[in-house]
Image (cartoon, rainbow, N blue to C red; front, side):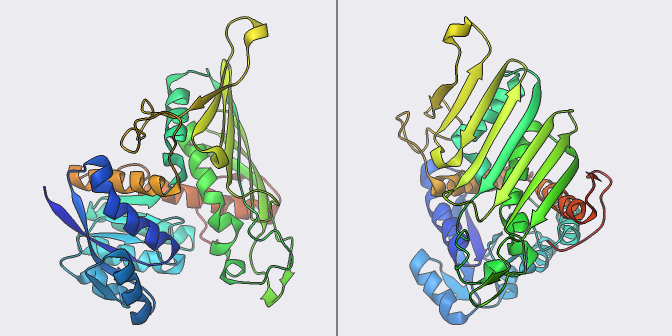
Length: 373
């Protein structure tokens, strides 16, 4: 069974998640390609060596170019800050190496367009790390909607709400500097990706983006705390989304509702192993939302557990993502979500920011202006 040398740029929160996933994915999914943790890169030689020992890499470096150039590194995971994404991806594609990049791609719509151009010119496998849509429950919801189980979709409501900066006295950190680290750069892409996956392309948006707590101990806040957005899908369906890092009480509020002509679906990531399904059929007295617990019959669940209702967790989403990436490399063709899919998310984010400034609806399909987010 062939192995493949994996290089991960970034050893922190997401770097660790990807390293653990690459160690586990072969055993969980019996993948045709078996990852070999070849090299990890971090900002200093000391921290890189720490990550090497902790995660089981063969080698460590503080220079990402060395990782990309190394012939034993055959596929690259970018889990470093957004302002490094473009250069790393372009260098990897120039050498013909597949890339899995964490979201959002780069710090601007311009960055993501350049990354798509490099990926598609190279013909290399490319993927963006939208992990939440990969839960067995959300995969099942996507199948139900595509099959017409709830009829013609008329409305979508989504949110990505957390409370890690809800306390006004929480100190300023890297998260409060740079638009890529704000709510529209950090949280919004996940729910926008979910909306696109469940309902298809978005035609136009109107948004309000706001910084609520402008001063925090240690500094001025230079990005957004929360945002609301209305949208119109190409299908004609209406949509509304809310994104927040100050949503008191919400820990992982990645949630959506989809309403159709013959039913509806509800999901909340804080209960990630269930969806709620309503079918407009049978006697009115017996109608109501039914809770469906995920189990072996749902996508990507059985390799983790043979018992329904036992559930999967956050790390399992990253393992599913690793499986999809490895299978794409084995087939020699990119899997959803590709860099182009990631660019479309960034296009919507940039259009929403422009809409907030202009106080007007913005046509997403016509939006081409660059801008940092």
